[in-house]
Length: 242
Ligand code: ARG
Image (tube, rainbow, N blue to C red):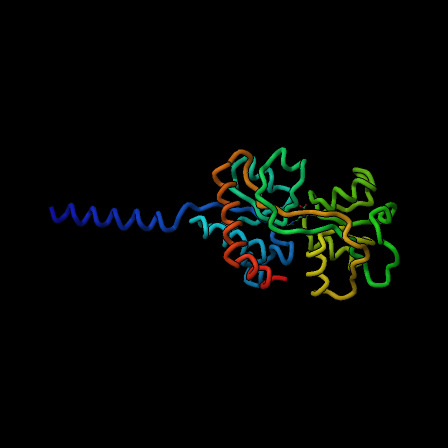
């Protein structure tokens, strides 16, 4: 009888621990989009988006494991179930909504053009036509550039890594980059010799991305976002990164 009571006690403790840790969700990101997601010197994935998803998950009793991957594979990763969610500065668009679900918007952004100091012009998107341009593959910036330059234009360099997009610009391999404004601003703080040459050219909103039809997780993301906006945690995270 004593043995049984002990066993029972052990089960209760074990289940308690599982319940406390909560369900773990695997969250995809492309950690080269400062200040939203990037890696520190020890290769930890950090940034605004990471703090947001962790705060949201905490409110909803979930734990998070981040998965770093290239931006253009995030939607596919959700479709195949390799990841449960993605947070990656991803703009809510009609085309993407056909494949995945988005939470309520959690941040506003816009595309801008970045050039080297001393470069004239590039004040509007049409100015990139006929020039060598850099963008990140699969982004709204890439789409915007394609719209004026045409698809498969060899002047449009579409790279997987943002760092390389900016390195090309610095080294003169490209004339300009089309990128999200908050990322351009963060990058300009780190490197000399570049400037933003255009006003904001689009109105975009970032959302947390969920596998299409996973209403349970989508509801949790939205309720978590509402809670962190209400309890001041969202503002603290904005304060920390911007
Ligand atoms: N906002 C843009 C988009 O949705 C760029 C996002 C890129 N994000 C990243 N983590 N590399 O297409």
